[in-house]
Length: 558
Ligand code: GLN
Image (cartoon, rainbow, N blue to C red):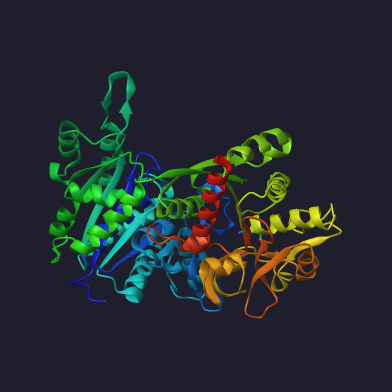
């Protein structure tokens, strides 16, 4: 790492969380990547979980899974596997077309665990362990570790949460120290909400002023302010933010509502955000590389030009927040755009289908395809099994992801083998027919955090299957996150009734994908192909699912 040439951009958020800081950080990274720079990204999550793997998606959105697993060693003799990280990394990967490393997600759980275990090992003998300097030093060490490992030209550090949150204080203090130490060229970008106040028809800057004042009281002055708002900020609003927040008017940018998030880098570039980054960070490559810029522009265009549309049902357990299946939604969108189709989702809580079958059949009649979602636990599961049964009975294009594939298998066994009480052990530990059971290595596992089968694994694809059709390869790599699996013993019986096992692990013992013979297109995969889908480069299996969905739609409407 050459400090004189490494640049660090910090991105903080003000007023509200959930205003798209991940997309803004990724867009800033994209502006620099389009100029030919090697960019890496850190996301700081100030919660005390070691990683988000144990969080309910309803609390914090999707849990993203990396290609690699990382052994986090907070102190000698303590090892934790980490492959599950914050969903913003999915956004980073999709914008930058680059795999992110789990070490780049720094959580307070990791930071405090390290400091406390180091204390027990006597690393700070004689000292009182305090937030400043011990916790802040650990934060800085973790940031520098990423710099050392990936030596990017520019590192972007997104701080989760909102300025003023108690949990985020040590991070903001560490950032203040890094800026003060002047070892790196640094930049602080503050993203804030500029709400539109209906009764007077105005964008209001007061919340921005307050959050910048909070930053200033912590010794931090933003260099650039980005206003998240319904529309573009007017010159008047920019002037006001400039005056009250101590930045030049040229350093205030708009982040208006847009339909296609991948357009944000282009929108920023038009506002000359790229230019100001170059200037403030003393960068040499001033303009985006033309061919790369045009390529991104063309990808964005594919999301806008559609010849037709498709409707896909997405029943699930975590439908009450938008972000809980974000990678799946994006993967469906990538594949739709790639096929010049616009996508409408029927996004429904599967417990509704348990209460009233009519609601389910009404939904299913409308749609051209069904994506059955991943998940954990028992709530809403019978509703999901009902959907899989409906797909089998009515021959509707269907893609089951992980839990969705397991529940397709349960539905198949119940229907075609007549074992009505068949279930996954996870859902019904007393089932007489445990058709989905714990993976062998999970049986003795007591720790719940970071212990699933995680990260990327090789998959052997069987020829003459829908899966092979999609990938055209004997061995593929996809990412996993599961504790249970389809039991081979029952799969063998099911094969006599039209089930096809289309993929195994390399040992041939773990079933990685299934499909149904003599149906239009019904596939279940134990892995999560959505994590590797990118705009302009859809996941092969999502792509074929979308194509099957579209031909079914045309067939229906003819
Ligand atoms: N709960 C299931 C398992 O652990 C499925 C997990 C998932 O859908 N990611 O195997």
